[in-house]
Figure 1 (cartoon, rainbow, N blue to C red):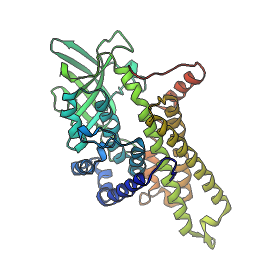
Figure 2 (figure 1 turned 30 degrees about the vertical axis):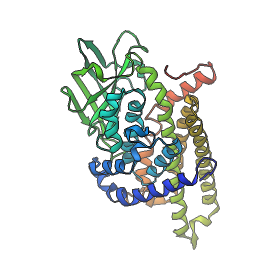
Figure 3 (figure 1 turned 45 degrees about the horizontal axis):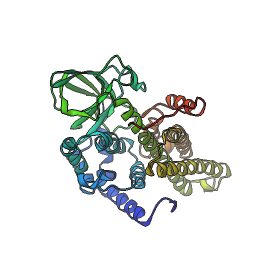
Figure 4 (figure 1 turned 90 degrees about the vertical axis):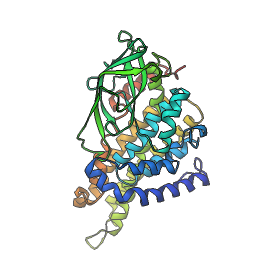
Length: 388
């Protein structure tokens, strides 16, 4: 690893977390992949170890560490070959909990953030809608104020932790006539009357519960508004930079795992009297794959440093997700090919890895949307600014 970014303390954390995953998580992965349900005990173990509080202030039970601890957390989760398990963990900590950290008031933080850090409560972030996709401003869900409460109606889809979470961070229109200034963010308990969810059957990420959620006249107390009314859109956009960097880091990490596995396989596999890693055409393929992984990884580390230093990196994070997820899909595809028929077998990791990776260019903003965002920045000189 690059010592430009990682200290001895970082590497000690990596070793400790890697060991934790091998002992506490890996033995259960195949079961969770088959059932689509992650047992609650592992959330509590993550909480006990402090893994859900890496970026949370100490007064709420967190560790308040720099973002390179987050990078390590993401990288090592990708290397146990369950994109679904990894997604459930980081969606809780870096989607739901990010909004709690940034927009929640003190009472809400005590009620939801503290137990989230401890692994006692699981959160999900509900933005995407069945008819909206990546068009956040075009959402149709409404939360109309009536007296001392808001009345929420609508639906969300493709929500990670959308079935088994304890609370939901929900974006909805408080002013349906204003496309960008009419969105607000709320926190709602799972067992609130009028909320129903359906688990979706997916190509990959099999261990995670991805849900479609319906809201039928759900009553939300006024105090469950997060931040200011009408500021939901800039809140969401502000946090998209972190989410896209998360997706970029995930991509380079799973691609690195695929390359390492392919190299080890080629070293052991004998064909025509010699190991596969002695065939020039295959050696050169690995050289190309490793080079692409390294380029994306180094770029992602540089973005992490800028984000950690307080810079607004919406352009760079969008570029990271666009290129890193494309790279990962292609590298993993090639790695599967290098395993030949074994790459197609479920007993080997590449089949699952290929399925899980395909979500990369879709989730958190499709590649097509990202290209338009980047084009607006580099061609039209559009400036994206943090919420104020």
